[in-house]
Image (cartoon, rainbow, N blue to C red):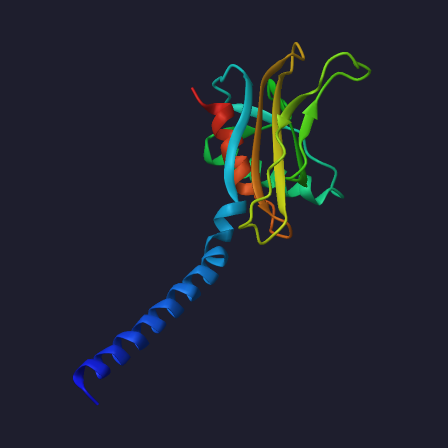
Length: 186
């Protein structure tokens, strides 16, 4: 066998090997990147009202049968405690929260009941499915509203959202963190 023939065989086999590596990388890339395609960290979607120096808060407790609300309440209690906010039924500010999860490919719209004249405005746009998705995306939304105890007026309302994979644990801690940060931001 001549040197040229041996060299061609070596180059030919390494070229096949290189093509196999590239094919394998292309096949594995969607799996490696898929987690990034669906999940998003919690972020504030809307914030209404003035931030204020809240030092005490009456965070209304949920019914014990509502496990999602119990978990969110615990996470909020922890976040407010870490920020020096004391929780007391006698506080001048009353806090109420809600948490919900929906299919992220569906939009969430807001409108007035019975008003058929105008289009409802989107609160959350439908998420376009991506070819890298390997799970069903779920949008988790949480709202924290604070009312003045004396007047009953809304002082501050924050809405946060996150996208997770269906079946993942709901991000109570991280949603509570961004809601508390937004409420107490100066």
